[in-house]
Image (cartoon, rainbow, N blue to C red; front, side):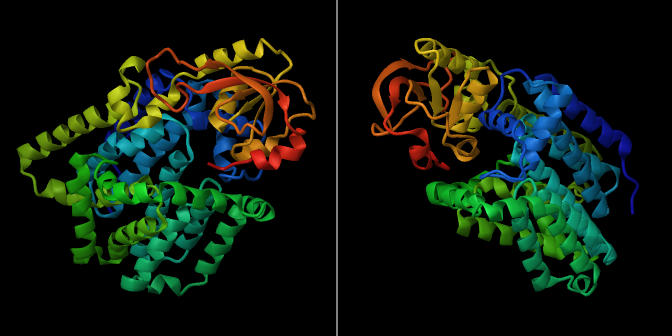
Length: 474
């Protein structure tokens, strides 16, 4: 086993942390982050659309570092840095020395997927760390045959299930591959059931919450498949080529081929098969293309050593630098708030999440002006981003029927005025008039630009009578 290149890998991590930290507050919160802030104020063992870990991290990060984008995104930055270290360790697991480890660290830090999810806190941010950790401990099990690694595997899976259930897709794809091409001997140990029990114990709080609430997370997942499944299937292959960087595609392809062909790595062969198995599962289910992106990082770590080996001394110095520059130019501009907000239009074609970080203070100001016409009015929003923003910026009496916001209502029983943000059904409210249309003033065409804000005299029925009708997941 080669020595770990702590110095150069640490330098890559230090640069990554510095860049992410300096840029973490340039725009503003993402709509999902505003939702996590709201959920973090209402800590629970589960939420309709996610397990409890991400809101908990949002709460811890903002309590320690402040309820600002800088403070919240400390957690995201640490997850991204941890992912880089873990992938460098994966490259070492494949026999890579200093060069492959550093190349893997650089490719990971500059991967578009890592840059985007390292910039803002999301369930995907934690997922990429969990999948990287799971890949490492699974490889340790394969290489050593030591059944005690099942405990580490169980621990990672258990923590992953408290963030997002997607880790089960990785488990399923690797499990199918192991049954097909081995190593099957690692199943013949009592450490396996011990690892399963540990995973279930760690995941139990979130699983029990979901079970006692009729598994709303499955309802959300099926809605994603129904609404976006066709688009996800069409975009699946093209997006696999973009999530790390087009310049890195030859590396992860080389990694998959190496794991399949190299007799010295026969013990890791199932990892090469697991990726196409995962892709088939996602296409069948209509899952989002980015769900498989963390697996590409594992394949790229396997491909770093053969790619460097095929280069002569000059190319070995020049080509990785070229990859770093091209990767930085694409990933950083697309994934980080480097451009003025007014220049985001071409970026939004590739990464619409940039635009979802702009315009929230302006929306709050617009709604506040409408509410000033009826100071006692309840504010009812169409989605959790709107509700989270208005709550964050201090507006009173904010409610929504979207996702877990529905569990935090209904408003107090009153027939008083209502400020409605977004579309609504006429039968819900009475005597409504459109008062304003939100304009962020930044020239950013995001989901909230142009949203209509109405002032209604009241509800058509008591809130409690219609609240179930107002709940929605999409």
